[in-house]
Length: 507
Image (cartoon, rainbow, N blue to C red; front, side):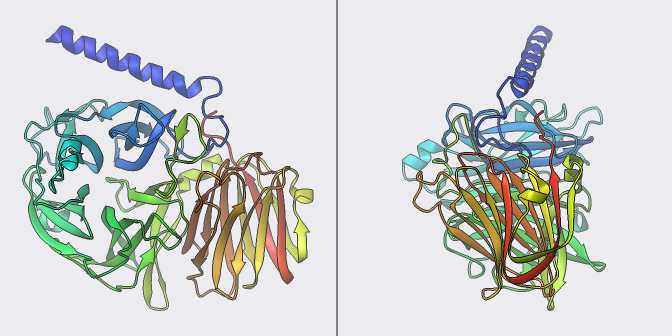
């Protein structure tokens, strides 16, 4: 037994060393379109973030992973770790498919009180809760081919043991029965599982993470229903001393700008049921490329969100070669009150500050028709942050272009009271008929001015407007790097600007 354990440990160390070497292999993480300030896998296919948990100073990111191709296939849980939410070390695959099926999306928690009984010698276990997807049952036309299972780790996530009693929550006959997000509900001293169940969310509770009972359902007649509900998340946030509960639900298709997107509800949760404060459909991100996002567990009052930066409309077709997909940058979530309604805002997590280099600043710039900022800033760096503070709400656009005439246009349309990202001429789009499009996000703030932050990477842009109330994420594929910046406005516009180069996380 000791020899076997020693052999397995040696294999694990060798695997970790090999994967770390991959991170520094010449050319890796510097291929065309490869993001420099976003997490992406060294190679092959990735989608939903999974099992996000913070423990002993380390942020764990698991993710849907297929190690044999750059398109979706039998799902595994890939694994990466970070001490700062920015720089990531790739780890060996955490969970492999087995006789119960593929390893679909789920969550992870630190079982502080050892309610599961898996802990030993005072070591609190990490528990992964995931969906087992049985492809044979699906092919046979059964309705119960997705069930919830658990695995535990006693070495801080390095290795995982699947529970012998899996599945712990059996499917009652619902075709889409997946993506368990589990949290500890302190008021009732129990675990709450938020589960996507076709066209609604179902809440379950447990005292030990093994035995679950149904509590209630939510959403059959509320929210957007253009597609199946997926990847829910339930968590509390405070505003002005009052606790509200936020419920995230991803939907595919049916987003505000076609395809995949994530809606949210704000309300109250009492340990049994969720009661929304407002039933209007709201979106955490209006861009086309932020899906299946959830928050890290065990982070205290902070709620840090991460999404998959793609869309099922074209995720398997985008023109990357060795890998497919990246994650958004980590985002800090908060609540704001606007005209009596409670809205969810998101901004780059404070850890992102560590990537910022010395800014180039232009104060009170006047735009009369157009202003070429390349003359002031010089050629744009490969990845950067652009901040604008505009004195009054007016039509304007930011034209980011390259030497072959491709351009990404970001702006504000006053008649629509909306921000927009126009990628119709931003590069390669022939891989999918729906990709080249202009997407809109409403201005939700009542402010008479505009503050705008853009995070521009090799093949993506993330827009955060008005203190994070209006957010958009969009990928694009320019043939040459973006190097030029021009502002345009109808009439005269005054703005302060900052262009902040960003360090690559992979160097």
